[in-house]
Length: 487
Image 1: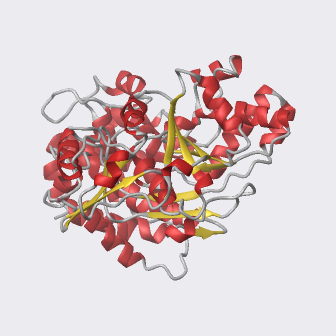
Image 2 (image 1 turned 180 degrees about the vertical axis):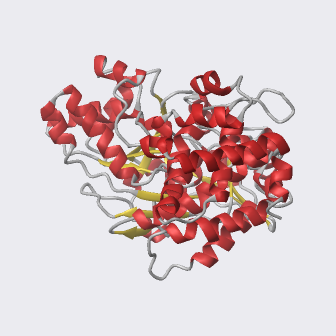
């Protein structure tokens, strides 16, 4: 079977979507750091839909670690298939918005040159929480992070997204080229502010004058939402049959998509509003809503579901008690903490989330969602718990989500087998709690990680007591029995 290519576009089967613009006429206007599945199912798709109006906004995708995406996409001229599916069926289309893919560790200089080029007007990111090299409890740059220390010593050969951004901005400053706009698309509260804070501090450590320049760079915050499971070999096989050509790295996603962006782009931007992007002055209310309702629920069901033996989100939602737990968590414990959203119906949104979680066509693995919990907990669950404590209100379901993470992070499943815990703090956490069996001891050890829990929750005796009691039930009864309590 031949490979997906520009030539193959003319032979696509009926009903297969394809780019509505001349691929040969695309030029790079956006450099995207973290060219993974989420970007290719979200921002790259929104961009694909508006390139006919302005082909100067093509995307240069950069992998900061692995060459896998480049090796998959380059032989097929950067094209890939998007499969949108739910329980009712699927729609397929080829996306062409990516012009080139680069691998930063192979050649940092070519990445920096592309970022410093005057044609690059936006640098966007999906590098996950850990990619910001920050302390998730306070949002400050982790100045002892190995990649940060390396990049300070080797500014022209950076490893981190922060290092690449600051070096590219330094080169633009020297050349008299205006700064690009920084556009974070990661699930962090006030993600634009977090990004601006860490790159400014890094620049200050290099040179105070450079820090002053970086402090003036536009960095609007965004809220992104689309569920994108990891692509499987089965996905590739089904898509190849439908396509009539091999696609090494298609992406599979759900029909729902959302992108809310603060409109601050001094160097211009694509007309994303024509593809449904919502531009606002302040995205924080939408951000908080999504992080707490969707992401907080997602993490809770992922840890509990994994422990109960559910491989996917849909399987986890089918466990007795899970749907009731998640619905109650969103309605009773999370929603009262949210800022006002004029004209937005939270009840409809919550129902939509439940339906999305139950989508049987998306094999979104609980293990995938469970990754990087130490970085995700502060934004997804702990901030909500703080608000509930301040209001003097209960947070039993939220505490169960945190306790389930503690149970999972020990690295031992309920049958006594090993869990492949993927987390930047996995080794440290395992060293603290893997050999502990008592809930109070485990909670005491993990609450000592103030970079996750902050000084306030670590010292809160009531929180410690609630968490210890919840974890004790999980350890004694197992996740399935604990879930049935909520049925």
